[in-house]
Image 1 (cartoon, rainbow, N blue to C red):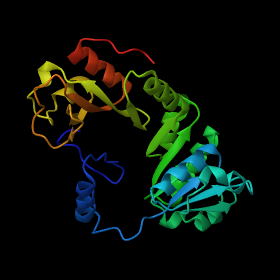
Image 2 (cartoon, rainbow, N blue to C red):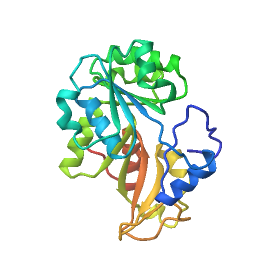
Image 3 (tube, one colour):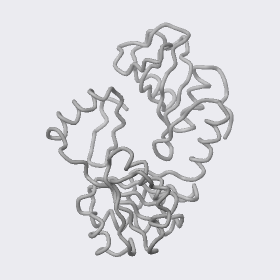
Image 4 (cartoon, rainbow, N blue to C red):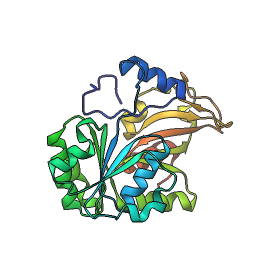
Length: 262
C-alpha cells in the first residue's frame, strides 16, 4: 500500500492488531460499538457451505444457508453440531424471493459456495446487482475462472488450486501461509540484513517486489505491527502480504534464493 492509495467502497482492508486495537478501530470508524453482528448469507449447503457455516457460528456470527435440496443440511447436522447461530432456507439461490427470506437485505456478506463455476458467476452478478453493499466471497473450482468471478463483482475469490497448494505447502513444513484471497497470501520470511533498522513502512520493498511488510515476528513470538523500525536480529521474521510472483521477487531480491515452484 502506498500513501497515495485512495480507499473506496470496494476496498477490503487487512488489519493487524490486538483485540482492543480492533475494537478501537470499530468505535472510531464504524459509528460506535456494533450492537449486533449482521448475518452472513451462504449460498449452497454442500461441504464447503456447511464448513463455512460452522466456522462463522463458532465465532458467534449468525448465518443462513440457502440450499435447494430439502434435508441436505439437516441430514448432515453432525457437521454443524454444537452451533446455534445458523438457519436454513430451502429454495433456489437465483430466486430473489428466496434471497430476501434468507436476509440478503441486511447481510454483511455473501459466501458463494457451489462447485459449478458458471453458477457462481451468475450468483455473484445477481447478488451484486440486488445489493451492492455486502462483501461477496466466491469459491472457484477452476483457477482459470478466478478473473471472471472478480469481474462479476466478487470481493474475494479462492480456488481449489490455491487452497490445495497452500495446504500441501503448510503440511510439508516449508512455511505457514494464510490465503486471504486469490493472489494475496500472508507468509513469514527471514529478515534480510539489508532491511534491519529500516522503517517498517518503508515502501522500498513494495516498489522492488510488489510485497508489503505487514508486521515483524520477534523471537519470543511477539507480533510487532506498530514498531517504527525493523529490529537488528537474525531471529526476526517478517510477515508479508502479496501474490506468489511478488514472493519470488522478494526472496530473489533480498534473500538471494529462488522460491520452490508450486
